[in-house]
Length: 444
Image (cartoon, rainbow, N blue to C red; front, side):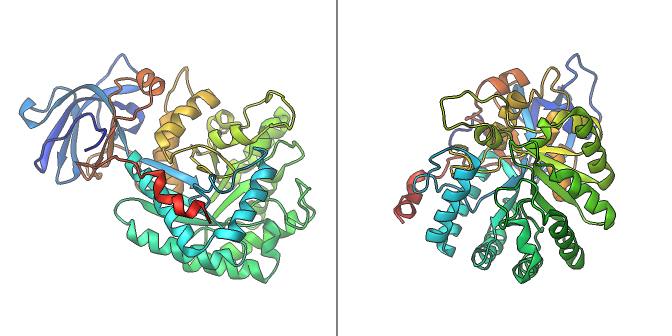
């Protein structure tokens, strides 16, 4: 298969010997090692599943190849994307590179071009790319201002069925918060419920676009929580994606959840402005999130791209990411995710969660030690999505990434283009879809 550096044996039962795996992702007895972060293992694969995990050197040589300390990872999980926006950059660039420019450019393109066929083809292109990269599950937001929800959600349902068994696909709405104060918000909540999705919004108001904390914030939050509770929906919110320290919606989300005794899951994404607050307010906000059971996802590549840009030739002064270390240390579940890809919110990207994690390590200083931070791109987002993924354990499907890299240092230093991606124990073709497949859409 294209780009893979090795081929597994052809039979249904075989071994991959002498691998290195993140110790925190292995659910089996592992031998002590001088490397506290990686353990040396053999994997026994039987009819597409991990049958056993042994210490390296235990399984007989005749069962399979010695992979010379190559790293192995479980299939990766992206719990916050925007597949419906993806790959529109060639026809709708962001002239300013900031959030305001991104919003305006996306609105223009959505109104002009987002037919069911356009959305379907771009989303499928993104799914095919992520699949080739070794991503096994994705949660995508769909722009949901009327009439777009009635166009995009049926496409999502179709693609979810078509990709079943390859990528587990979940969905959330995204719309301005104040939409939920009227009938459009109720109708959107019904569409989300019919699609088995999560109710999502941005904690900004279309009626008060310049206000980081709009006057209708609390009323609208109560309405969002109520609509979700009535339909048994989880929440997936874009919160405080801003460089303005006046943007303090996260603590209001947490307090609303507690006041209403909300029983569903709550995922809050971005929360970049929290990093600009006082230490005391950060601690107060994290405590409120912990009490409310809120999970956090950081989008480091996209927010470093968008935040703190200037119209002048000025170097950005901060990294545009939230206080992820502090949140994790205080018991919150935290993840990193890919977010946007080749659209006005992020001009780059390739639906590659291994690359997202690699960049997150550097942007967020998830190193010295690396510890168990790899969980933020595997096990933790899977748990946030409510699915059984992101671990190496007996009985799990053998959906794996086998890297030529033998250590975190090698993995994080050189892009792993030659990774072998196994699905149910078989190597897949990792040839990426050609951008030329979308050329006719880019002339729309």
